[in-house]
Amino acid sequence: MVTDAVTCRWHYSVGVAQALQPYGIDVHFAVIGPRIRDSQRGELAALGNVTLTNVADAEEWTPWDGAAYRGGEWLLALEERLAPDAVHLNHPSLAALPWSRPTLLTVHGDALSRARACGETLADTQRSLEELLAGLRAADQVIAPSQAALHDLCAHYRPGTVRGGESAWEPFRAEPRVIPHTRCRYRFAHRPKREFVLAAGRLSDAGKNLAALDDAARDLPWPVFIAGSVGAGQEAEFIAADCLGPLTPHDLANWMGLAAIFVLPSRYEASGLTALEAALCGCALVLADLPNLREAWCDAALFVDPTRPVEIGNALQKLVRNPELRARLGHLARKRALRHSPEQMAERLLECYGEVLTRRGSTTPAR
Image 1 (tube, rainbow, N blue to C red):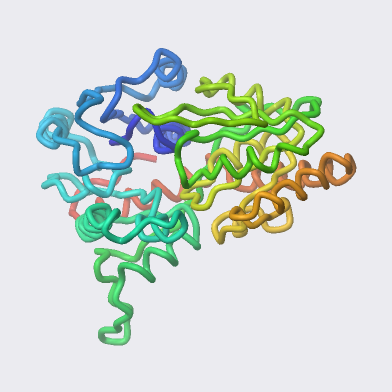
Image 2 (cartoon, rainbow, N blue to C red; image 1 turned 45 degrees about the horizontal axis):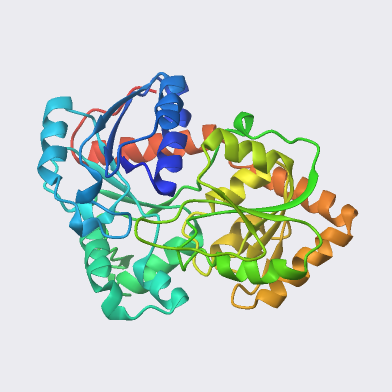
C-alpha cells in the first residue's frame, strides 16, 4: 500500500488495513513524503498486520504535486524486495511506474473537477490532469469512492465509444469499481453532545472553503472550532472561528464525539471521510451540496451552497435553535454511516484483488 501521512489517503489506508486484518491479509505501508508521526505509528502498531517503510523525505514530495516525487526507484526496489501479491496505490502519478505486480489505484480526487470547483485554470492543473490520465491507463484496476466520483472520471477521461456491443473502458484496463470508504465504528463514540460546531480540514486549502465557515460563524451564538494544519509557507487567518491546530486521530474523534454539529463547507470534496467520522459520532451534519456528499448522506444532513456563507450560517442557526432536528439528523447520519462496514469494504477489496491477480495469472490471496 503506497500512501502518505498528510492527507485523507492516510486515513483511507489505515481503514483498508484494518478491514483486511480479520482475513489474514498483511499490508506493508510504503509512506511517501513527510515522516509519519508517533501517533500514526501507534495506529499501525495497534493493527498488528501492518509493516512500514518511509521511502522519501518531505522536500521530495508535497500532497498537491505528485510529479515532484523523485523516489520511484525506491518504491520499485521495495516491491522487488517484498514481492507482494499486489500493489495498492493512492497517487495516480505513481501508478505509471513500471510495477511488476498487479496494481490497484484508488482515486481520491479529480484534478479537473477540483479546478472547476475552486476557480483554478486548466493551466494550473495540466500536470495533475496528465498524471491522473497516465495513472488511469496504467493501473490494472481503478477504484472510486462513490458513484459521483466514478461519473466524473468517466465523463472527463473516458471517450464514450462502444466496441463490439460492449463499452470500451479506455483508458481503463477494466471496468472501474466503486468501493465506499469506511471507518471502524468503535473508534468514534456517540457521546452526550455539547453546544459547539466543529469542522476539520487543511486551513489554507481553498477547496476546504473554511473561510466561508468563518464568515458564517460571526453571528452564531455557539462557538465554532476548526481542526487542521496550515501548509508550509502558507497562512490562514480566522476571525470568528477558533483554530485547534492539527489534532491526532484520537483527539479529533474525541472532539467529534462531543460536537453537536459538524460542518463540511468544501467547494470540492474527494472522499468526505471527516463527514463519515462525524456521522459515526452522531453529529448533525451541515454539508456542501456536492454530488458525492448528496449520494452518501441524502436525507441525513442539511445541504448548503458552499459559495454562500449566509446559507451556511442559516443552516447552522436552524440547528442551533432546534434540538429535536439536531438529534434526528444525528441519528439518521449515524444510521447511514453504519451501513458501510469494514467487512463490506474488505469483501469488495478482496474481490478486486482476486480479479487483478487472476487477470495477471497470479495466485489469489487467501481469504
